[in-house]
Image (cartoon, rainbow over all chains, first blue to last red):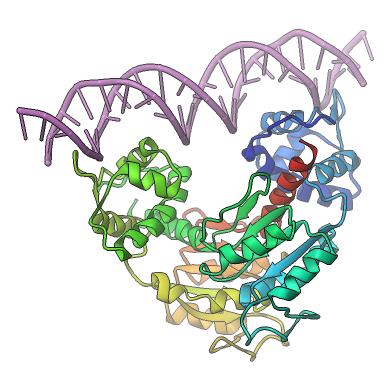
Length: 212
Length: 212
DNA sequence: TAGATTGTTAATCGATTAACAATC
DNA sequence: TAGATTGTTAATCGATTAACAATC
């Protein structure tokens, strides 16, 4: 499986969806699947599906299609889900809590190693089996256990500071739930989840429907 | 302000970001802004910014730029944030709680009118000032108070049923946090937030950095 | 072998960027 | 008027779709 220098972001965004349906197929005992069938399931065109997979060298066989297990495993590996991943959460507000409670581990082998906050009110509270730590506690865990992902679920004001501590502690990527534009060193990607923007987009589409 | 039949989704996704920076400019007392300056702030090219605004008829003036207040108000109106919007949440798990606690109203005039669940454990609990209601309670509120957005924060299994109740109750759009592919009537848009997919995308980018 | 279905090239489509005339 | 900056057209770039030869 070759991995080209750059895969377009549009392709990457589709991989988790392929994987989800492949998992369903696996559960249903399917051995093989064609791009046509996968297209029916996912809503993508067979052509696009074949193009997507060929970015990684092609997983299929002419006249047969794709082996479900192989394809699932390949996509899992491409997404970096073939090994345990570690994650810490900064910000013990409601969103931080929700993320701490998510069954990440069970689903994809992503382990949450702690949740931290700088507010005296939050520190010491119990959240999903974790005691909320302070920023020194965060530094300590980053030193003790290498972390893949640092989640930023603070308010906008605290985001850059949280980011700095996480990056200094060696996290490989930032999952940012604030609207702050984070300053990051090269090589540390940030994935932004802007719930507000998502809601606004929906409201636009609702409004558009009204006056069309 | 003309509203064309279809604005590409790429454009719409950028509007909330423009609006965020315009709000900052407004707070700082700026009267006018050029596409060049807005480009520095947002990271988009001036050309793209002008193209984007021209989808809606053009808000600027040659030689001057854009009036910050006017532009902010226009985008606010386009996004449907110029009037109060109502939202109910189905699913009183951690994510539903987090969404119920968000300061939507304060920020954008989006009012949460209730949170509902079908689990006896959840029903009756107090969440951010709301008593978690059951599905009959959801039906009742939908009848009493027209709702714009129905949030689905259930598990994957319960998503379609929640969706059906919401649509029957007349919500104008669905904000879906599950991985379920919802069946919806024409004219009711769904906005999907797939946290898992977002994390997977980040993990891909982390892994990619490693072996590049 | 015949049929199926991929891998891959070519054609199309859409979105972004560049350029510049219009005009404030 | 001169300078600035938009609105808008043209050029470029990238992503999706179509087509079909390769091959299992």
